[in-house]
Length: 569
Image 1 (spheres, rainbow, N blue to C red):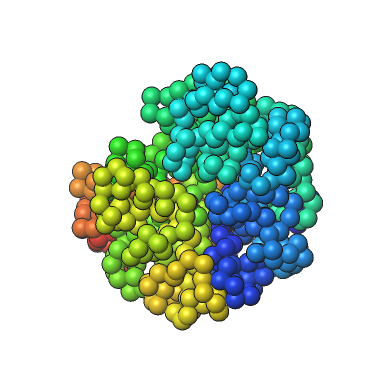
Image 2: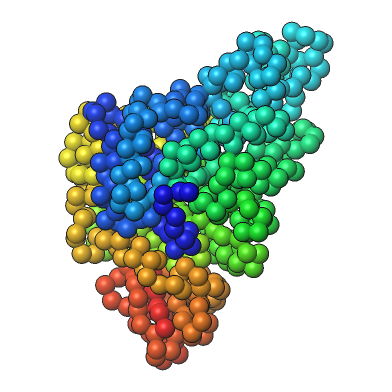
């Protein structure tokens, strides 16, 4: 039995990117003892679980998501004793521990791949190997089996002479995909999950798990993009059900990262009767500022599309009996406070940074699903704003910069685009103080600290009325205290033509009704009161201004720029 068992519908989960959270030994890299040293901070925030990103041995080609040993701790992050101590201390504070399971691919340094390279047929079958098109026979690579492109740019196939085959890597070339059609692979992955469960782990997050079941036929796509062809593959539900049963984790807190997924599949992944996952991450709402669907082509966020996506997924998952994970940021995303308009006045009350950061929190915490806080969200951490491509460490960002320049963009324009989109925006060191390296390390941090850390940090916000940190603490308390937020139904409301950038919805449970209204508009706007139906019995429960917006006799709300307000009947 897991040591910590909470109703995931009433829980709040905090994601720690271990490498950037807290460095205990001065080497500039966060570590497990550093996380343990900050458990009192997390307990004071009120979170129920802490999700740790990979700390396993890794060459760090992809921030630790290239795992070379699933059952050990990388010395960079500490020891197994440090891990066991962290779990014990978290449990002592009533906090559960979730681990990241990266089971779609391994590092090419993993023993399995190395044994495949050495010629062991058993381990060759662990990976997806194909002959090249047009090959004349052994030793002749020919052309890649398909035109697929990997997530980080370039072909998704790599010729390996020692294998005499091309191997598939949906991500970096150093991350060969596992072949889940092989029952031995599936058993080995279940053994990994069970190993950590038996060490006291309380939940699991499964990385890009929607990609584990490849299509029956590998074929070219019009543009080389293969994620939609691979996502939600023909046996993915069968594989997940088997994994959950074999690892003995049915009923534990689990979440799947679902790349290029569909609503129908996410319902299947999460409805209890299918015994797969507790909830899913989907990413459609974080592509509303991609021009023509291209991550590296910028446009202003399309709030009408954002509203449609939230409505369809919230109401659709509810109708199908599924469950959402609610989030804006993670280790793979730029900071939402920057991308949705909070660009001025970092650390200052009443600024766009203050309004947008709190508005995003209100929206996430009042929808149906389980809220996730990514480290620094609760402080209002913003994009890095680096002045040179040399400051970036992320392989995807560096590759994107090169391809943008090769495609004709100027160096300045390429840097501007990478500055908006880079995953390093979410990986900058946690901002504990306004001092050296933001209090993250006594040494030199592995990634530069943004200048905003001087004002945006835990020390400056802790206990300060109206701060971002105290605002988040209040929302965590509401999630714990109000059954309507955990169990209530959701229905999206029409804000009217005068509020084109407003997202409004209600949560209802019995006779209790909660109404959440969130404006992404940098200008004032008016919300039609008809669908809101805010009668005399409603009180303002929360908001990102000190007072509530004026309400006219017809019930309409005169919202101020980027205002969020929640009413409870």
